[in-house]
Image 1 (cartoon, helix red, strand yellow):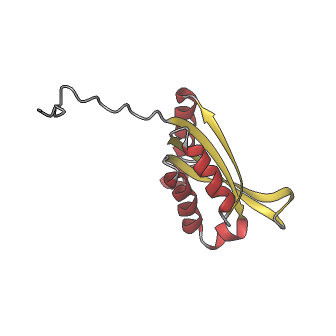
Image 2: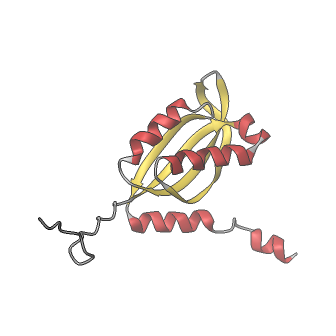
Length: 136
C-alpha cells in the first residue's frame, strides 16, 4: 500500500489570523510610574504582547487626581496604547490586567483601520512647540 505525501501543490495554506486594531487606556498608579516609567511602560506592552498583540504606538496621556479612590489610591496616570491583536487575545489581556498589581483599570476600544491610523499619527506627532524649542 502506497502512502500519499503532501506536496506543496496539495498542501492548504493556513489562513492568516485576522487582527483587529485597538486603542487601550490603562490606569496605573502615579507614584509607580514616576519612580520607574520604563518598567511600567514595559509591563503594559508585555501584557499586550503576551496576549498576542503588537504595539504600534504608546505614551503617557494624563496624570492627575481621580474622581473617586480606586484601590485606596487618589491619583493615577492614564497610559494610552494603540495595538493590533487577534480577537481572542482580549480574554488573555483582560485576565492579565486583572491579575496585575500595576494596572488599576483598563479600557479597550476596537477601531476601524482609518480611525486607528489617524490616531496613531496624532500620538506619534511631536507635541506643539517642539519644533520651535529645537530651533532655539
